Image (cartoon, rainbow over all chains, first blue to last red; front, top):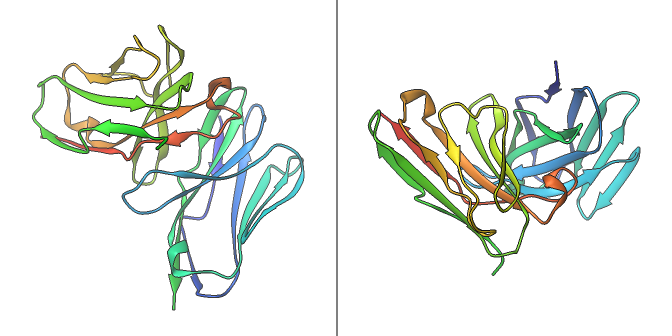
Length: 108
Length: 115
């Protein structure tokens, strides 16, 4: 079967750095997305990785290792507004497989 | 403003009463999709459409219908809703390539309760 694993919940402190991991076992791989979803709102796009390595975009970075079936989203200089769920999704043979999401709680 | 709109945002209905959730996008996107989101399960695709008059089943199509008569609209129809269809529903669109490599833009969501 196809599976994506993310931690259910994480807690971090305002101003700190947090890394949210995503591991996947899929029949194919054509890219990996990260989306942010605030409670009760729609998901919004954060990043897309198709090649191995780190993609940096401001305070957010996303890393991919295809050989390990692993990705992480790194959030720096955490702000209270970063409290949200972070969804990992894999394009597997032109089907998007979604993880259940990681709820990130930011404490002052 | 580029956006995906859904209506209604909230709906409480009873078992068996047909309902339609509308979805419209103003970005001239080819690809549109419906998802449902349930706690602990992540987003699950119901139906998707690669273009006008082309629709395909996603992972959980049972109990749902869709149509794509115009590029901008992609309504979701529940002919005979049941309590297990109580969920948060999202419509999404992307420019092309079936949303698989393109960023998807999501509507605000419709929270449906079936009693």
